[in-house]
Length: 85
Figure 1 (cartoon, one colour):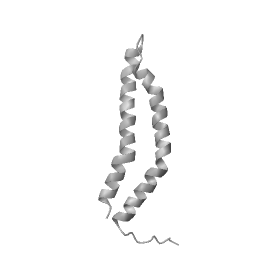
Figure 2 (cartoon, rainbow, N blue to C red):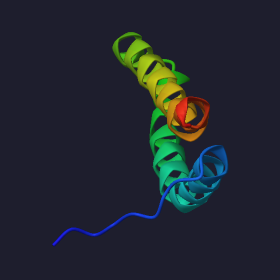
Figure 3 (cartoon, rainbow, N blue to C red):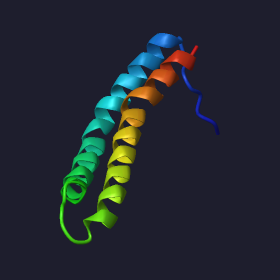
Figure 4 (cartoon, rainbow, N blue to C red):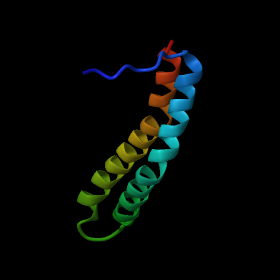
């Protein structure tokens, strides 16, 4: 037995779905982002012996976390709304 989905009325439903999803996922994504940044920022600004190996890695990971967070919370939802009918 299959469940019938209600007909989609288009763009308004997509915007509403994106708003609900962003609000629901904002807290876990923000918590993960800030925890990771909190651990990596001291490595990125550290000076002293051995820091020449840790600093570039920390900077790259920070850039990746910021980029992935922006993609997750802004770009992907915008693309979803733009491509929905």
